[in-house]
Image (cartoon, rainbow, N blue to C red; front, side, top):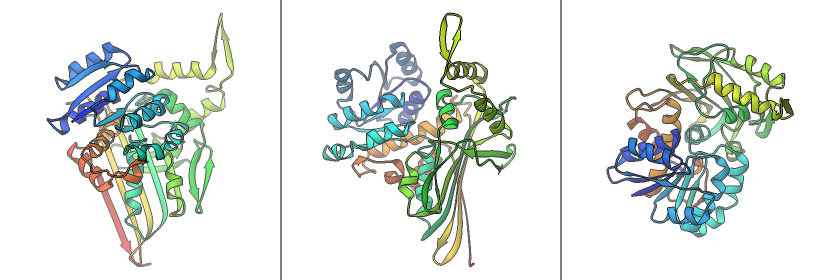
Length: 384
């Protein structure tokens, strides 16, 4: 089985790594606009990986690269995901990606009829959040007759926090700022509404050594999930987990205008405050130290006439043996598992579908456990 992975960076390499470890019959074409990056990653991953120089903005080259592949996985910027989606549909090749932008996902969704007509499945948002957390939400809902509340909490963090922000870059600075600036979508009293990000601050308790953490509203972490679950749940929210004090400190910087789009004149150059802030964060927070991902999904409702609560929890840490970060493991592995389920025929629905609509949650949990990404389950039932 041959897969095309777009992007030879950390996430693309981690996707390829997992595909290769899933089966000795897997072959991967690892494509990147930078041929040196593709070659270096392929050399590390082994002989079943073929590097390729590919600019996905070149339609002829992209079409040629898709030929004979079971699934294409986009681990590059969300900006090209619509282009890749159109090419995959035209080539009759299944696709999944890491998502990252709701506007792009909406444009992909508009291609649903074309995908179904071609017998193709396209699954955006296959990473951690959105992605795995959405799948857990949909899986949890199935355990209830009626659902009152769903609370989703996710954070990628350094194992050893450094002041003043107690944070290190585990994914993308630009994405981090977007999450903190754009409004968050929730369900309140059965209706979808938007709330300001970096609000709703609450304490959250995890086992040692983490202890009391904090969580607050951020945007984009569940993508279209609120629309999917509207009418099935009274309350739904998603919050990002951080070490205590992070929210207030970072929000102060935003309130002071550090992420503003107004131009700043520096000598003969012109940049925006946001560009300068992004560069500063990259310099100060890009230290490569062991990380941890904390994720929790909690539910309350009724089942078989009894009130019930349910909780899924994942605590995953940097893997020193493979040198794969927790963020890479919890983002890339769900994506590669989804690609494998597409290729082996487990996922049979066709069209442009969100992972919560087509990825079997129990299978995802089982496959992640094989990779030592463990999701624990706690449940209580009592007669009201």
